[in-house]
Length: 212
Image 1: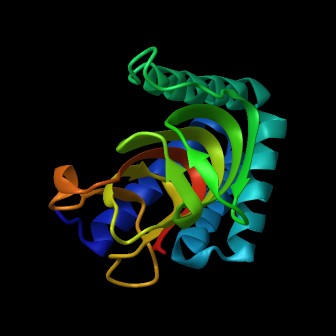
Image 2: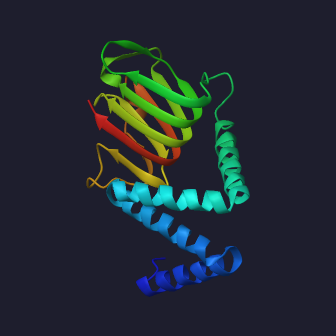
């Protein structure tokens, strides 16, 4: 069901009043600034969007540290539960505070792996990779992520990705704006010599999956 613009405005005004009367209108204004920042960022990674999100989040953090901390703990718990879906013993884990992974300049061996982290910066040129197995599974999960993948066009590709705040750009996108959630699989995936399965989940991120 698609809501009309008036319905959305009424719902937003009601939410603003609820936050204002329960947490204070200063907090409600900070939440409004944060929401405006999210909107700008989702349209095109606007720097003003980042500034507004940071300002609103910082103000809410200062005034309601306990609430902010509870939300962070909840987010961490959600992503930890997601990591438990990965079959134990099948995919090696690389969990930590920060994941910095770059494979762009020389040939390298590609292995399945999973990683849970708070901040991720991943650059992989898979046209230079030598897969260890016919099917490779890569699982990346975190709070903030910047992921750029260059995938050979003759590989089978299976993508499950979600970025609520940010965008996912890929080779079959209808436009350049990107999407926030993507589930796609090469029609003849099982028949490809090499297959890549991606599971990417970030709260805030920029994900690019392009053909090589």
